[in-house]
Length: 321
Image (tube, rainbow, N blue to C red; front, top):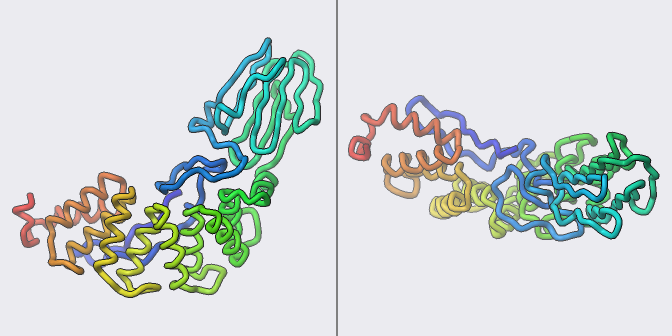
């Protein structure tokens, strides 16, 4: 679910052009219960009572008491512990107590005979408890997400905003998405600040306001969001929402790359190749494209191949090789 930043080829002889901050598609969200999955963003876990996702949610953690085993999926191992004659599982504000002959979910007890295996699945925003393959308690994904967002959990606010922004499971509502992103951003979630910036930049369901978009990108970048740093560089490069300033653009691209965004290396390579803000330097461009390609940038890989193919026609390229 990463950012779609592939550029459109200008000509057969020119590296791909730097583009304005690109649409995020569905790559807008963090891991559900606090851990970061699949996005290179630099921020701490969200505060609040929700349990943090386990790094190996599919494997889970397990304890055994007597003849009964209890496996927990999607939450950290400290959410599962032995307590008296049973096992206590705490997921957010929910408490599951497993006894040799019963399961209690938030105080509601289900009596069970010959109990052997209990699985508590806390992956995503939902929560379910199964005893020997039979579901004894369940909170579905939408209900769990609404519950967490209602309690001000910033990750939940962001994910709910994504749904309203994209129409995933709900009617699209850009204004509501913007409000939820704002609450999460004001609560300290850098990703939400960046997402709000993207929504305002695109004018997707809200009035387009690229000056305000840049302000939110700046807030997210100040918290270490590498994609927001690149977006700021693109804004200064194109002079949209911010003054055109190639030196500032290059500076933000450098920070973005140092913070782990490989696409920013491609942007720097393009600037070096074209001599934008600096003298043309194909050798430096080659280095940036190589770095970006090594770290997974498709645009950088294409530019690297293109530059290597026409290397003999480029000033200084022979020496660089």
